[in-house]
Each structure stands twice: as structure tokens, then as C-alpha cells.
Length: 301
Image 1 (cartoon, rainbow, N blue to C red):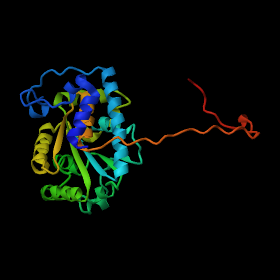
Image 2: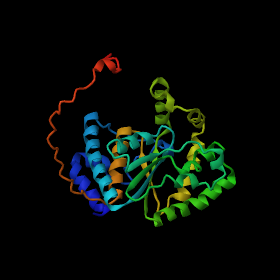
Image 3: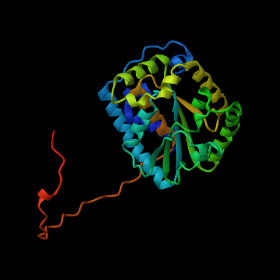
Image 4: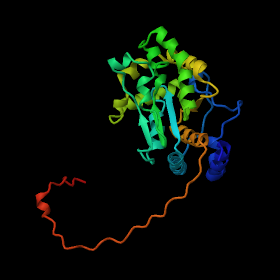
């Protein structure tokens, strides 16, 4: 099944109502995000029931894709980049929550150690690349050098320029080795990012997401815009293109991204093995020790 066949099948599966939300607009209707500084037309919200129903359908398709990747020994790398609070983690969660963690895993690397700083820049990412039958989702990636490291001064000018010389070659090497490489940029407006920052600040369960680096980056919107534009100029190639997700609406962004991902890797539904549960064995008369000897969690609810 080719990618176009996948797209047609998904359109048929999800129907006319969903099609209007996932098909790309033509240039005259295209939404311009706040990253461009241009105004945005009002976009209708997706109802919770509709969103959950469509997400469920997409997640079923992701399971089919997972089984195809495993059976055919494919190696898949999906990169998720974007500004802070753009929704990268949210879509990664929705992709992985129904998948087998032995097949689909997430790579979210911490700040490099002193030893790693002395290595070839891409070296620490290589060990996270997939083996046959695996999918790896990078929650941020080697593109840190083109973004946060550039803007916050964590790399030199020479290191920055060397990254752009090396990155297309590195990705070309991955692709030639048989890795399927897909890159997503989650695009969020400054107004929506600020709203999400304020929401995190007000919610004790989300406050941990607002790091000191986020607060520092908040003052450098234009610098990040320049860094992103330069990154695209050097690394948005024919063999390894960037796919931009309009992420001002979280639900819409998740559905759009997942539905697009399903068209990027040709797959087919494989027949599921028939599983029958055998009858339980009858008791052999084993006497268990008294439960008073065990520690139980208090039942407060």
C-alpha cells in the first residue's frame, strides 16, 4: 500500500466530517500562525466527543502500523520539534499510549554531560536509533543545536555553522541505512504560548513543566523565530523535509499530526492470530496463609 493509498483509505475510514479537518487547505485558505506575525482566521473548535472518537480510530490505525513495522523489520525515527509549550509531548503521549513500548519508545535526552560535550555532536543520539522492527520518537533531538543552544549561547558560532554542514549529511546517512525519518515542527503563536505558560503557572500539576529555561526563552521570541527560519533553510531538504503542524489548537494538532503520520509509512493490516483462553484449572486444595500476615494499602476511597 503506497502513501497515497493510505491517505485514501484513511479518508474513507474517517468519513466526510473528519476529512474537512485533516486535509490541507490551499494557499488562499492556509492558516498563518503567529510565528509569521500575521493574523489568524477564527478556527472552529473540535468537540471533546468528536475528538475522542477520531483519536480512537487513529490509535487503532497506529497499532496496525506498529505491527507492520515489527513484521517487516522497518526502522522508524520521528522527530518532534517546536517552541516550548507547543504540544510536542501531548501528541507523543497520544501516539504511544496504545502502542507496545518494546516496539515504540520515546527518546528525550537530558542536558549533555561534560564527557558528551567532548564527543562528536551526533554521537549521543546514535545509541537511541532504532533496530529493525522499532519506532523511536524523539521529544526534541539533535536540532537542539539549531534552537536552544543557538539562542541561549550554549554553542559557539563555529559549532553552530558546523551543525548545518553536518546535519543534512547525517540525516542522509540515516536514510541510506534504511531508517525512515520523519520530522515535525509544532508551530504555536506567541499569544497561545503565553496562555499555556500562564496555565502551567496556575496549575500545581503542570507547574513542573515551566522550567527556568522556559522562562528565559519567553523573552527571546524573535531570536527563536530567526533560529527556526535558518534551521529550515539548511535542513528542510527533499530527502528529509520538515512537516509543520499548526499547533494553536491542541486537539486539532494531535489529530492532524497522527493522521499525517499514518500516510507517511505505507502499511497494511496484518491478520491477527486467533487467541483462545483455555479453561482454568480446578483447585488442587492448596491452602493459602492467612491474609492477616500481609500489609494492605488503606482503602481511603
